[in-house]
Amino acid sequence: MRAMVYRGPYRVGVEDKERPRVEHPNDAVVRVTVAAICGSDLHLYHGLIPDTRVGHTFGHEFVGVVEEVGPSVERLRPGDRVMVPFDVSCGSCWYCARGLLGNCHNVNANAAAVGGIYGYSHTAGGFDGGQAEYVRVPFADVGPEPIPAWLADEDALMLTDALPTGYFGAQLGDVGEGDVVVVFGAGPVGLFAARSAWFMGAGRVVVVDHVAERLAKAREFAFAETVDLGVVDDVVVHLKEATGHLGADVAIDAVGAEAVGAPLQHAAASWLKLTGGSAVALNWAIDAVRKGGTVSVVGAYGPIFVPVKFGDALNKGLTLRMNQCPVKRQWPRLLEHVRAGHLRPSDVITHRYDLEDVAEAYETFSAKRDGCIKPVLVPSP
Image 1 (cartoon, helix red, strand yellow):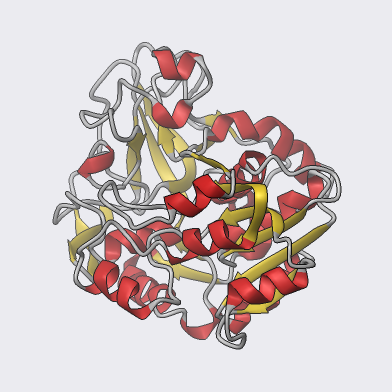
Image 2 (spheres, helix red, strand yellow):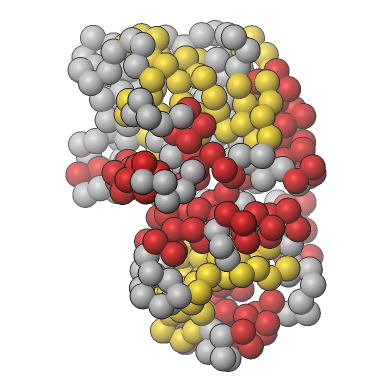
């Protein structure tokens, strides 16, 4: 099969790889119909995530058609059109039994730090991802779900990570009636977090970013006020002044490890690889939220040291909540919203590429060129 492969920082391509096969009775093999490049894939692309090995295939957002199932699989049949959550989970461990599917303890040798994630380095289990023609899906009776006939593939694709994670970000923020919510980052997860905050009763939603096209999308898609951090002198002071000098009730970090805004911290994290990420957005969230407020973190960070203003969070009495999204827990409510027409997830998709053009897709997305907010990859027929 043809598959995206990692060749080192800033270097990806498409090569022939052995087509995956059923290795365990609970496996399925899925023919990918469309996959996405996630903002957190850029952390891999830029070399920020440990143990990202040459030859690894990225891609934790994908949908497709079941080609083959193992003898123990009961819920899926060849020919089923399925969406696959980004988190690999066994469905039966202590964490899965409590709905913490993103923290599954049976799918990753490094499970003390993180669960299993498709295409996200050997730190997250070493599972090859869906930026390929085919992908092996373990625990096929636990993760994948048949796509409803009324749901288009590209809308289902956004339900594999970006939309549930954004919705989860608003959930973690415990957004209440009339709350002021500030979202840092206007990528797809941030856009979905801002849109979801309205569903939960927010009275005001503000999105912060530095890319004009993303800010325009936040106004159009998420109906949010926007702040261009490249225009204001101090984004925290600006947000405090805009909230009566109290601060927001809820701040959501939807940026993660490569936040800009503090050149030295960005250089230390992104170029010198001295820390597990640049925590600029997270620190802004801590500073911009009111005392007693809540900070929700759904942006991705590496599993090594990150400089966070924990003392400020303590002294302000903040609640900090974060996790990998348990995707399937979000699907019932989100499918209701989509079917009712409250949002169309595919509206955030801006670019479509053939899988063979994956290097161009990554370079364009990484450079935020051509208004690229969410690129998707389609394997050749």
